[in-house]
Length: 300
Image (tube, rainbow, N blue to C red; front, side):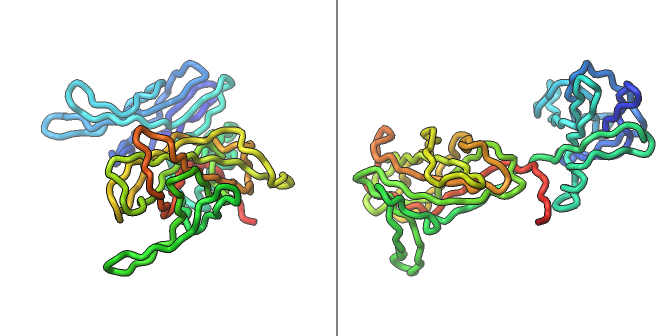
């Protein structure tokens, strides 16, 4: 299913692939006629044939997405290539190669022997990664800071280090994190792991703001957050139970992040936010960060 430009004629190469676990086979070379610039997708489904179900893959030039057709068959859309106005093909097929070898393939222009004068680039496939920052790894803000404490469970005597954000006034904690080199430098999302101090009422609101800024080589540390960040909001479920908040909206990292930047985060509790703000303190066990990776990692 590799798309190539053969002297202005676009062709789909034969071979085998998998989309959502469905094996698809391209038995012979196929000419396709897209209107440039174009994106090339496969629409893949298992469809009934006699007493069996067979895999069917159709080439389409608009994203079909995932859907169920009128015969109740599930279809899956998969982007395989993009062609610019000049006819240059970029391969978007997800690869089974991973790690170092995948990165080597992904960022190299190369030629195929049967089309020796036609070069193209394999785009690195996107993948989603997550990282966890423990509450105890954060630093209370010097001005209006939260506080680090250790709590012990009553019966089994398990200890947890937490960052406690009081209920009486807004408070904040901060941490710095060098995002992985493969990060696409795009927006991130976050979830909080937390629990309320004893006495919270079920259904009361807890609201935090998360802000970020990138610090590049030579940048002063004393840089202002330009925006208010994104909200992370949740409701109390009861005393002594772990809470996992819903995901925040996408948060754009300020400061035009680049490779090797240090990303500085500030997490602030807004004690007056929500329809019924929780009066008790909020104990943050940690923060879960999700981001997209598609950059090659180069050895130092």
